[in-house]
Image (cartoon, rainbow over all chains, first blue to last red; front, side):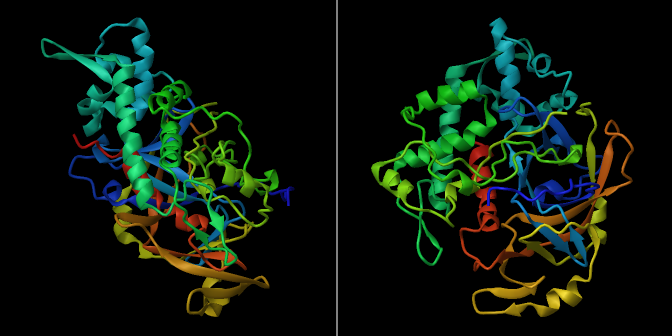
Amino acid sequence: MTTKKKRTPHSQNDRWVVIVADPAVETPKKDESDPVFVRLRNPSTDEASLYLFGSGDVQLYEVKAFNEDFHSWFIGQAVQRDGRLLYVTPMDPLYLLLPYLIKASEEGKFQPVDQVVIDEEFPACSRLLSCTRSLASLHYVAEEKDVGSRKFHRYSQEKTLQWLKKKVERTVTALRRSTVSVGEGVKSTTYIRVKQEAREEDYVRYAHGLISEYISEDLSRALQTHLQLPELSSPKEVEPPSKKRKLSDKPVESAEDYTKFNSSDFARKPPKKMSAAQKTLAKVDKTGMKSMSAFFSPKVKDEKK
Amino acid sequence: MSSNCSVTTLQLDSIGQTEPATVHLLPCEIEHDGPAEVSRFFTATIKDRKHEKTVSFRGRGLKGQEVSCPQGYTGLVLSEVNKPGSDQEDRTVKVSSVFHNLTYWNLETPPNSDDGIVMAMAWPDLAEAIHGPLDD
């Protein structure tokens, strides 16, 4: 089935099914405002994506849409056509601050961060500096200088790559614990996928892919070199095109600006480099199979207007 | 026209007034938004088997299972309060239902660990690795 049934566009969507980290919805302390969804510049796409500031802006959350074609909800005694599941998970604000620091570093001098994190198009970006972790973690990506009572910062790619490498290492550990198959899994006749022993490189590459959804392409490439991940020589699609899941490289389809969430489906492109065994496997008819790795893509693409 | 300046407030005081909702994720798109007699025509015919639930929907056999929200996470249904006329205005959503588990349904295929929704439940752990503070 390569053709897709034409559907009428989602019209008046005014309900969303969300799984949210508990701290984000705890009753605000006195004098603190309710949480707010805001649009900020996505560091990977440079376009608008939806995020949430918790009460008092102390914590930033990512809003990610998990989306499979042809799904709808029953909620109590009602139908909800939009079958997306949204996730609200805590996010490291440093990923969003980084592009501003990098941009400012073109001038090569130390600057106060509040003069750097300014964006006419996304005025809410300055609120990132209110997050508890923001100022305390700038030293991971920038050199710091104290002048009087003021702090000045200058982006350092070297420090940033070290910081990102630690992120990759943490992610590799989490992937090992998880049921996510980072290599090409094999599906048995019972349709239950068996998690295979994956090589260290597969884990690192997968983790690099996940982290790359939060950084620019340039930085992603630099990180790949820093991690000493070999370049992928012959990119090949592992799956037949018809079996590929619809990835979220396209904007979430809807004119509703509410629906501009981060990436729609946790799907990820299959690894591009294949081992000999994988190449053999790739020749096998995989009708009915879907790549496990297809589920996690933090591939973040979003519409702008 | 971009409207990156407008924000959407999540009204938390509404959370106390909600009732838990039963939530099902169906393997088809239903071109409808609004009330439906879910318990009469759907829930009532669900059969609890050993490893799966089964139900017939529009003549098709569905197989499903219940999954819980990841630890430390809660399911919410948010709904918009007073939709504004333009995308320049700030908006407000309230919590209309709370859920701690949901039932997802496959068409024909028995529920298994390869199902998208099961994979999605693993996301918070990975997100913590990607976004949690470094311990040093």
